[in-house]
Length: 373
Image (cartoon, rainbow, N blue to C red; front, side, top):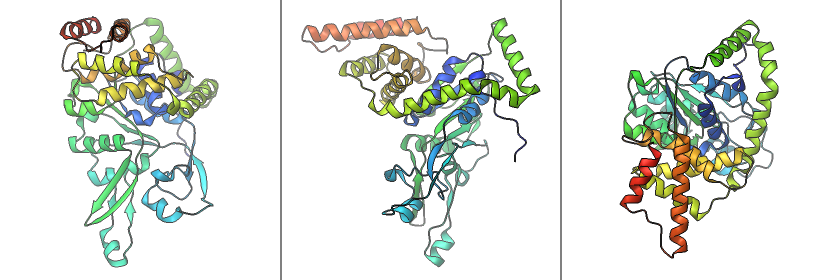
């Protein structure tokens, strides 16, 4: 048995509400695509990521699968599960806690994607696959500290897998695939260098965190950490009911997120704002919609509203802007909400008069001005 103390409880983390919410929304829907947390050292970035893994409910897996294959989703199975359990009625299953995989900055490509044993394939005609980080992290959390110091090629591999949900390894005409659906959490200190814009855009959400300035909150942080270090088990027991309540809430949100409804008006609001802000490509639009749906599910609703869209914009846009609006983490949420409300009114007025609400240059300028205030 491990002598390690229990992980610091997620709900015991003081402040940093936006960071915690971004992690929770990714836990509700892994298809969102991960979160980049930027900030100085000692602001709870790694603590929050590890605490989330301990918080999340166990998942059903095929018992002997090294890929955490989901027995209820055969369309997502690894080649291992397909070859062994296709058309098999009694599949051995059990439950596992989700994995928390910490990727070192020095990781190589083979360490990340895994390797095929070509010698066994040639001599025995068998596909033998040695799992890598992506396999170990499937249906769990893949944490990369100082991701800005990781080789760009490795970051590309991680982001590709996070986006596609599958890892395919090909060597000498032999291929092997397995699911690679995980919550990618990257952290970095901007003072040590930034990611290239192309890589920044691949992260679904971003949050900038700063040290808490309020005296009473800082005292609370000290008191909680002293209590945790003095008796980790007692501290965990104290916070366990709150953690379990949040864990249940996340599990319930997962059950309904696919059924969350949105309207054509919602899509026009999202597309119009990203167009006004001159966001390249369409990834941001999709991320905003998925994040809004996850937030609606988190609050137990069946359809998204402007508050969901506002929050999603605040999380999905900052790192995609070349300059100007949302230059820091403290972008005024009220201003974003106001911009969304104005865009909703413009779209409504355009439809009532029989016109499409294409924003002209003046409207786009007003949106930028409002959002950047």
